[in-house]
Length: 300
View 1 (spheres, rainbow, N blue to C red):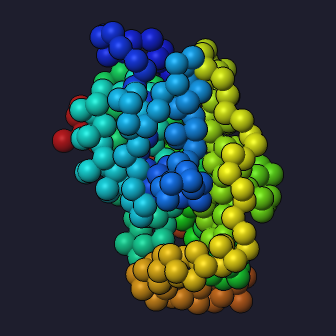
View 2 (cartoon, rainbow, N blue to C red):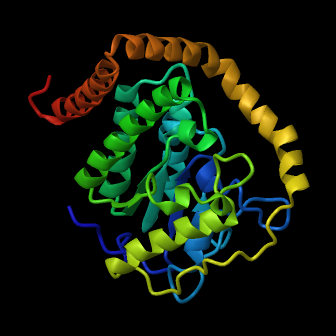
């Protein structure tokens, strides 16, 4: 399916409306705006969508993303607001937080994303999506701890790939490329891009839109506007907000992650690690098959 045009899908006159849904990545964590708030890739992209800049708070750009959001929050809280705004362009970048919870369920993730994508595209919006690197790799976790998280993120990315194609989304492969290993692109916590990283995401989304003739504004600059945080500032962030972030997730995920790591080590010792990958692939296939069955008129 080809992406829709940005030219008036609402059927009314007025400026371009861009709405961003998701978690801390889209909220802008890692890219300080200079006033104590976050800016982020979505705000940077908004400025380059049209010759007349689209800015947050102007009515043209609304960022609904919230730190810590999972697919459930996007579906139940952010989507209704987004539909009420009737956007021309909407981004949905979410899923990493789902992988960091003991309640992770790829079938539930797939069903929620399917509902979100369907509702937004049925209203006529052009949809932007992205797959993301796994948190275990970004944090540099040891293999036995990192592989279960990588397997979960691959599952989410596969679902996003399939559903993006189904709904004609413009999809960004952000889970690969040199930017992942370039430390200058990332903030002190190693999970969120710094200003350079957010600018890279904005540039790549802008290029996708330009490729389809959907933007008339200038691409964001890759060069940072603000000084790179000092090492002491980065360490202070990690010791305060960063420590809290890790503690909240460890309380929920760590006991299960240790169990998964033990299972990983057992399979490795037996030479049966491939079974874990096959099990994850089967779960993704079942999740996508369940969506196909649910959409058939005779499914009941």
